[in-house]
Image (cartoon, rainbow, N blue to C red; front, side, top):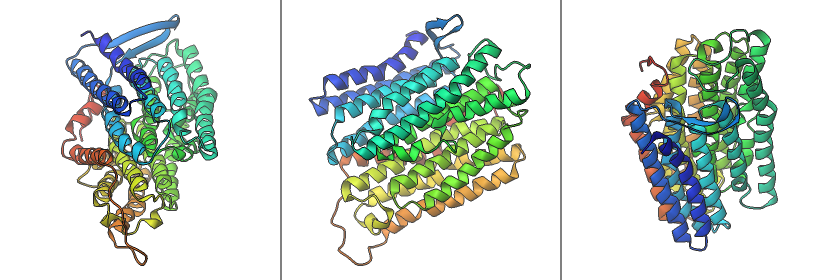
Length: 489
């Protein structure tokens, strides 16, 4: 099979799934089997792409030209390969979880949910393999549009308000900031192709270069850099499988992936070191890490707490690449995967608690672990990964980011990461601890665990958190191959 066909398949398979879901909507078992089957096929396609890329095959494909030298093109490289593997691996797992959640919670419009989910994965594959900034921008917008029906899934006034904030911030920032940055880059460089080391000409310097960097950073609002982060908590009105999609599989990961891709392949990390505003943006990312953690501590609603936790964790990735060192970029690339697996586990647990116990407030969950031990144990494992403690994969990405701050001589930011990890402990670990203590007063819990499909999905992602601690070499080597000379761990 030719390399071009493999890339086309990676994008086309989720669209084929969306068509199959729409056609089989009256038959839930067939509809969901279609999602899972094509999800597994997508994993196999991405594995095939990875093997050919590892063998030195040049994998690229060109669709069409919009202007001379500007078109929709795709090319495989290490950073995109990480994103594609993470998203495709978590898609079928999330579908399995959604079967238990959507049926157990009696959700309506389930066919629309699964179809929009599949289209979102197609957009993610296109973003992951985008060969130029124009292609990335087009599918970045497609992702915003196709996830809007998922955010407003409930159809309530609250859901519609959350959807307006979601779409307004994401579309507004990309049109007001990212689009002008792309046009400026095209005018001064004559190309938008991704190239390691950047494409900006030497003549571009001073305030104009600082302005361009600011437009890029704030234009990628899916990375949830403060102050353009409000869309993320607002989107928590969506069903929990959608929250898992937003936080782990697609939207926020598309944001931080795009930010890393732009700073490494459009600006260039060596050029980034000389831009005056870069230090301000670096410390803004550090401030966002701490502020979001502090806000998370004050949230009694479990999904709201996890949402602000995501804002903080995305700050780790933004900080890593803004350090403008190879070790920082490698740490950021690894944290994309580590955070995805840990955070999706936590959201799976939050949805399981809602379905089984009909509880969403943390203050109401004391003693719940006695009746839902599997769910609370999974939550504990996911929490360890987000905190960055053994035996979970988050340990390695946070360690690399800490060493990157040393490489950049940023001891203050190293302190920020350490303090943030302590805050992670403060707002995550009390939840499972509260759950395993018996309730004080009142009647004992009379509930059972969530439906079996949801438990299976939680088990898979919990084991993945541990597996990434035991076997991190594959991910580290893949992240390191972004650069010709790999940093040592």
